[in-house]
Image (cartoon, rainbow, N blue to C red):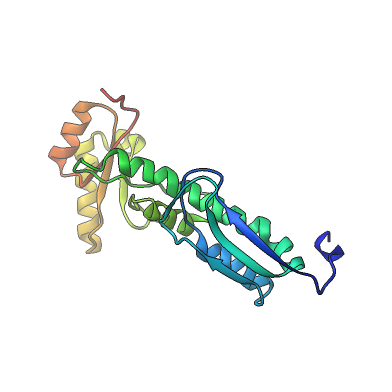
Length: 200
């Protein structure tokens, strides 16, 4: 409603800058907002997804209808900020383990409707995707272990189930103690999820 107060013929230029150090992510979603509103909007990027930027760096410039730019700016910036925030956080974790033989994986717990986008942002930040849903891996948690009687029983049942289905999926076990780590490894778990461990 407010954008409608701007003269229909008014044209303007806009610039998007960074306010802090970040890893950029979300260029395609930013562009899509304006493509949906007005194909006449021109967006010129100086960076791409995965690039590191500094404070007050110009990210892109836009030209076109003032109404369209004002109508789309908030949604476009929200995509860019949200996904860049995820990529930036991921890069911090990736950098922290860069000299270790490990990979940082993400979680399925994302903003509703943005799982694909957030997982893409994790990759832009240098980390890796874990699972997209409950269909692409078996995660044995505390309640499963209690119901099965032991980690060994739970992993064995999972392996038998996969064999019956003629499927190959990773079997992951959530462990809370070093004894559980040892049992899960002996049982043949593919992945261990360390739950509530301290650094020591």
